[in-house]
Image 1 (cartoon, rainbow, N blue to C red):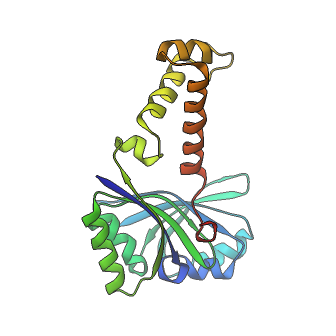
Image 2 (cartoon, rainbow, N blue to C red):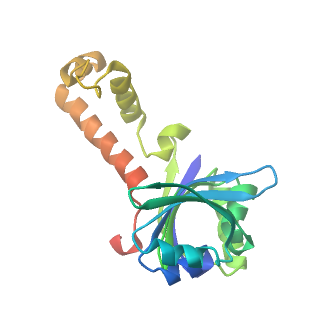
Length: 220
């Protein structure tokens, strides 16, 4: 059974501390992480919210990354690819050695907020021991066991929510104009329109929460 952990870690214990300190209004959001055949770990991340010139100057001097490349720019946000160095060995270790997956990560001047999936509790325990041995402090804000299929677990969807949303997509519910109404979908599922509406509401809420937000320690 996989484990999803949400936690915060100080920026100086993770990555881009120099760049984020130099441009404290900037926000860094990791889009995805790729591990290469040479065991190099390369994150793709969006940077937004402040002075790009100030950030990029410090970014290219930051010792936690190297081989930086700007990939795209959309509505004032810039997408970069880089390679993590040993300064962020904790996450490199988790990603490469333990098979953990970074589901979401947002960095600010003082801290990073991360959501990671571990294959089981043993992998999570190994990660915790590694951080303790290397004096990497983190604050755990949420821990959840995932029994759903991997695709559903990543987005906190229940099996029924996933089935409902996928069926709605395939049947044209989200098309303009709609090819099927909620009433017709409810009939196909053998439930009331109110019950189906609750599934949509719950599924959409979980998708938004899992893809567009991440818990902040102060919100707990």
